Image (cartoon, rainbow, N blue to C red; front, side, top):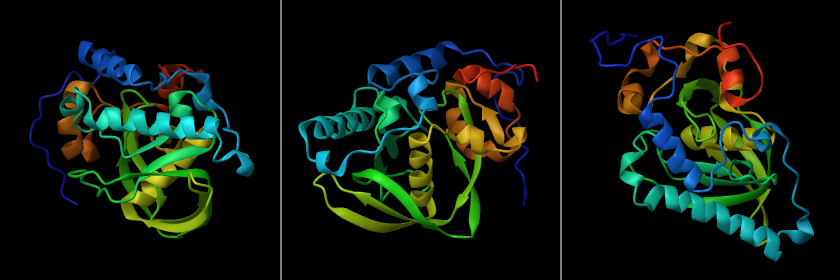
Length: 241
């Protein structure tokens, strides 16, 4: 593998503060209804939806809120400024609801040049996963400035319910498989930085650097230790370790 060593314009490698642009981006996301990374719901296991209640008004309202939040992020007045953070999935805990409900874009490609239609899955379970795995870049509205390279199964099969109460099974492959695994992790109180074993693969990325990061993440100079992530996200830790 050839690593591009062309000089790039980044903030200092030891700058782990939140810039004005970072704070503006996160405030924009919270305005959509996404809870901050320190919210305790993101660290808890979400409750299954009673099958008899899937079509109830309560659950349908949660589903609608998920779609409203996701579509607001995609189509809102600030959407053009969110380069690198287009929403391809969303889990109910991210909007403060501890229920096992997710949205997944089943058509978007890894380049994210065009979004597909978001679909809702209730009580999703991974019933099979491929032995083959692959490393891929991930970010999250619930991880703030932390991005990284995560190993995931290339394909997974899930069993879930649709909002109209039908039980389905579906196989996801490649990038959409990554999205599904990422969103189901949210239902179990797990975020992607905790899946990364090497600090060198966990990165601190400022809002001003997102476009550069998409091209240069394999050689990103500002690493994020697990302790720094735990401190930032409210899990508890020492950022100096």
